[in-house]
Length: 346
Image (spheres, rainbow, N blue to C red):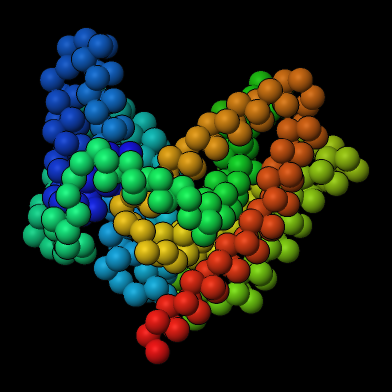
């Protein structure tokens, strides 16, 4: 991602994203011809790497191609699809494997990847001016330095990455909590995850369909109490009436609904409330999110094994409380940036 973002700032979003779609398609096709586990893993690694093209370049292109409100609503729809895919994919794949060879699954994915490639080739607009900035190690390092010295970006990256912690730590550690310690079967465990993902999907659908202006500060702040009530349920519920999964799932789902209402707006603010190259900003944001999630998952795992359920959930509570303060800082910086832009126009 550190390369793709700056590269797309210099040669354009279109060639980078189209190349990513082509690499993914070819990697899926190559999987059909693998004859050893090593070859299979290499092909899968290339497939995984090609996803970075979407995360770094695809999302920022959507935001650039549309106005603020339209871009946020589209991101809400895209987020819902992204969350549904991991549920539908394994289920449909498992069902198809009863009738076809596993390599046929990769053939199907390769066909879908090729359709995406052709669609991008024919219809994707270019959203940045090519060659406006020379590509060199010095200029790339300068851009990253400017991004990480920008306070608005830092507030935005902190808000978004910390907001992920309650959900991602739960998704990562819940199999140990519910299956290994709680005695749930695999199918029972799968059903306990539906409310968490479903809450985010419903929240995004509400933003896309019913919210007139998702950037309105009053709307953003109204989502915060929902998040805090969900986090409070994690602790209070498990203290007063311990249950294998009820309070953990209910609290996490309520939090997921609250944060799902404002996630697309937070991304938009962090990416566009500055004058920095957007590909580099997107790459920097994704790297921060991935690093924070990796560390938080390991911390959550350690807290569970060494302290149990309550210390594990306290990690989510601490992260959620800090988010309130970083969100206030982000909105304050966004307001200042908007005021400065308005003054320049006058």
